[in-house]
Length: 130
Image 1 (cartoon, rainbow, N blue to C red):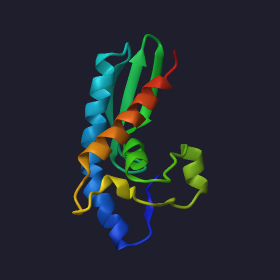
Image 2: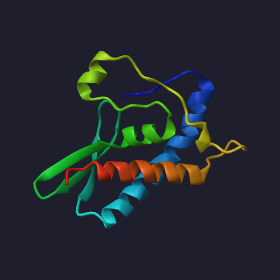
Image 3: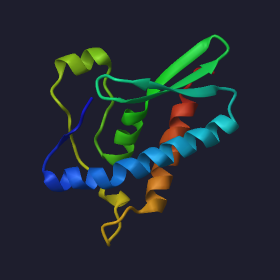
Image 4: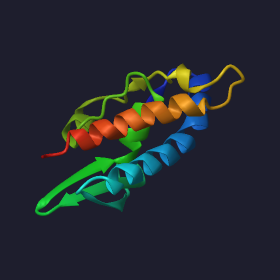
């Protein structure tokens, strides 16, 4: 689902955070895959917005995770991923940028970004079928 921004400043802050968040997500996924019995690959998707799914497989099990949803969960306080059927029936979700990810100079706070990303990716892997 595409987030809705309250104002231009929120959109600009999201623009600042999204690429660094994506990079941290990919790197933290790589680290988790190194110590996991799951195999990972990426699949390009076109809808609802162009992006990628993380495709995790282990024996006959498979799980897909939307990469944008991961980035949105990191960059925004109140983002909740929705299923495809929920997206069809709900308006755009208004989001609030996580200001702890931006330092006092207006740049990315890399340590907070890394900490939040690492925690989320660890949760994703911990929630996989055992």
